[in-house]
Length: 528
Image 1 (cartoon, rainbow, N blue to C red):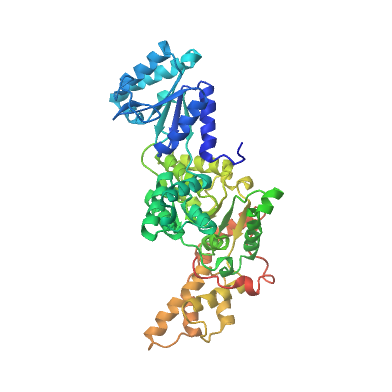
Image 2: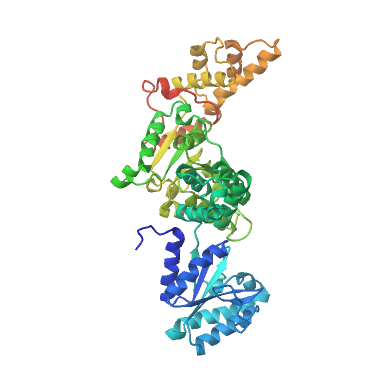
């Protein structure tokens, strides 16, 4: 007997097997991959003692071998449902009917008859004698089950292929070419598998085949670039480029960085053997422009994993249930990707209306409910970083410690950090050797955010260029600082309220001034 761990699809196939043995009459399988799901459904049916057949509106009923059975049912759905009912009354075998095109026939006035036939069948089948028991499995791209069938249907979300399935797809794709192509070595093979995780089985196979045609070998970079295109096409996630230098390019926020570095050991085999739980995520609350988003970009580079942005607000749809379906789709991709960093930026805006009297018909509340459920129950290795500039409208359940490994407070940069932001900004504008009074400039930027300090340099460059294209100096930067009205002044009351809230509720991301020195502060400027 093989010791190989079951794939996610095999685990779900085992669930289907159990449902069939328990005589569940109607399973609603959510998938866009008919072929891959059907292979597992055929096995589950056979293991449960059923004969499986498929139905679609083009060819009617077909056996597991794909051959059409003209004497059983027809392309007409109502005739086929009548056939299934008759077999439950007078048949001599147990049957599972995998319905490919059924959902579209249940919509609107034209679908009333079909819906009633299906409902009657769902009510009838559980009491059918075991030797002639029948069950229906509906394949659908969405989990939108008609209300009339809600009490009869069991919804099953079919997972995207995991690493083991992707590995099998790679081997099947490469095998026919034999020595005609360069066979992937262990390192290349692992990279190619990682690059395809998050795709459907068909997409992965197509990417591998394209790589072979273009390069006469499996090229992980080609596959990874194709995955970015596919995820962008889906429109449910945004693929971001991480910060090349990792956490070393983030100045200040030393407590936050130390904590993140400590969590990276949890992904090692030794940590898993020891029983360390996989890090789930962290919530960074604080003042806008002080580096919260920057940390997510740096962490993805530090851990060498993909960086994705999840924007629940962009997934909202006008139809009932559409937003929830979009979020579920995005979360399925995240789970399939395995180790990755997922950024939910300014989450308070994305979920605005979830806890207030919103005019979106409950869309925000649905999005919040789906996200909270996933955060509580997920088992993957995705690390979630959520940021917020305003916690006043966030629901208490979102801030509960159990949903996050840690909750952080990100305040205005201290003196040491302000100086390093200024130094780094000048370096990024190729002015690292310019002679300016850093002490004076740092003291002139008290209560500035990192983004506001960074903005002083381009302002000074414009001034110096207009004044005979000379080099910038301290006076130019001081003049820019004097014309800046910092956020700490325009939103003073709001910032004080957030500081008061953070006391005792969130850990400071930065140590006391005397602790934050040297290498910890190098480079905090490039993106806020």
